[in-house]
Image (cartoon, rainbow, N blue to C red; front, top):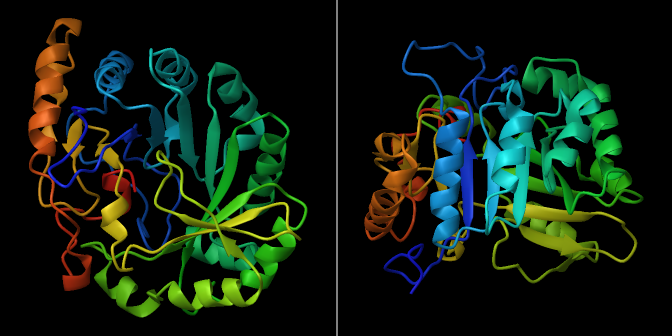
Length: 326
């Protein structure tokens, strides 16, 4: 039995590791007033990241996603990518970013060992994008995505949070975008967080309507890979790209959970909306502590719940998505 398994028979080949809580955007559903440093201890250093990834890889983790906040704000990002890509057992290194640094930096990331890229683009309408993020930077981000498509990534994906009254009627624009581009656009159902309850109640829209629209348009559901993220993906013969739907409020969403999370300060979180976490940082200071680190991770997994409490309005200890890596 893999160490990275829980009492419900789920295994966890996929780790989402946050590199920073800082972000340079002001998205309405996350940090509408921008990031404000709180003076607490600094984020994980490169040596800590390397030891963490090596420990998880030794017990079955194969796919690593670097998240934030905005991970590209780390000045040592290229070095981090290079080091984690070289850890034995790691076969996929992905990055989730808002895309502002893509045009200048995506090539060095690829050369360092990045294999997949996710870019957050909540709208293809420049004004709507500006209203959601607080920044009028859509053209350069789209240019960066096009540059990435020529660099041989295993996957280039775009994430769009579904927002009622803002972008929930934008499917035709995305279909035009996907017709000739081999990009996977994933529509993410808005999730309730503790600091954005009012925003959630105003803008939450269930994903079922979108899924019915896709089915009516001839889109066909794909089989899900063992180390894939939570998206249900659809394909269509007339389009180069794919469409994914992430619907955390759907029935049995948590049954297919295959990912763990570690925050930028080194806390293991068993669920994006869990009630608590445990600090791994004391065991990230020496290579000699790997066995103890593995034992702690295995012990925590025995405590993993069957699912989240979002249906009951319980967002756990997550104040906003940037605090845990989304």
